[in-house]
Image (cartoon, rainbow, N blue to C red; front, side, top):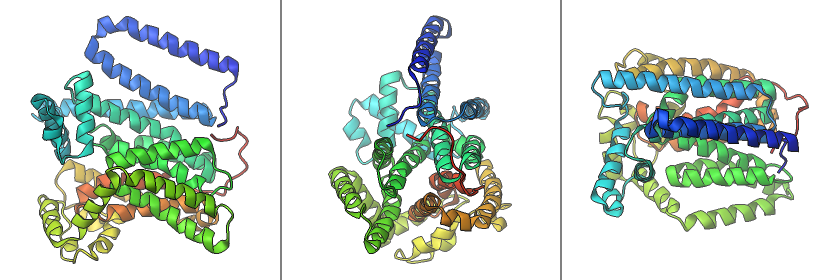
Length: 430
């Protein structure tokens, strides 16, 4: 692992963190414990993002983008909280139906003093929320700020991916768009797990890309494994999206007689062995069975069509092929003829963002030759497509798709304004 900080810089960072901690500690009696927890979560998140940026050897511009990302999210969080309380939503945001369930179940678990009974069969994120409530107090702002912080840490990671695939222009574009895109901002300040899912998928991409190299970086390996652990806990179905590009690449290596084929096979077998011993494999099989069985599909249809954003045409097909019908919706929906049929603000936002994505898709199509001529670009594109494929097994509902595909959109950001990469003059990557 190569770290691009010399000894004097390390000492300066140490004094900076120590001074920041002292200043923060001095203000705790003034601002109160509750506000101090909020500030601490944001501060640690920003420092973690700065740490990644420094570790990768990024230019100072990335620090400004990190500051932009956290500022936009804090402002939006404050505005939505004001709107929520003014409209009697008790701090929840419009469209946050799942957030209400996460919060309510976590509170119930603490009240009954029996986590196993209260959360049996419940979603893993609820357990995480209950843990935070038990540790720091029942306050929905705490998990929301954790989500905000994780979303900010994604900024330097996307910058690094963009720099590896297309140089500084692609890196700046990816990190800026992530900082400003409505869905990236909204879902990262909601009491939902989508920020952690995107974080896990972005981290995992470092491992996927490292398998294509002759020598695997220890740093990339550790980062990637961390992402896989997060995904296996938060949304195990997305392990499918990680495995598809890896298996396809292994097949290519096998037919070409690549020397790293055996090494990659050993790593994959070891990873499969580890995660099959956890509940992730059982959850994946259960989800697949639910998505393809007649009983499960009927229940899915009922949930998906309960509202104004269900995709009725998908529900007309048999379980075996419905994912194939839903795949175009996962990538392109809402379609133009649906943009003016929505009434809720969250779906209007998705329509506006999809209009922007059509333009961005055009730029990727325009640069497709350069993207596919670049080995890293090709793998990132395949990885994003695999996530779209995994999303096609979700509820046939625009709202669900809008959330679940956020990870795929994030992975496409480094490819938008792709140009042939010039030689990088900065210090080597992690």
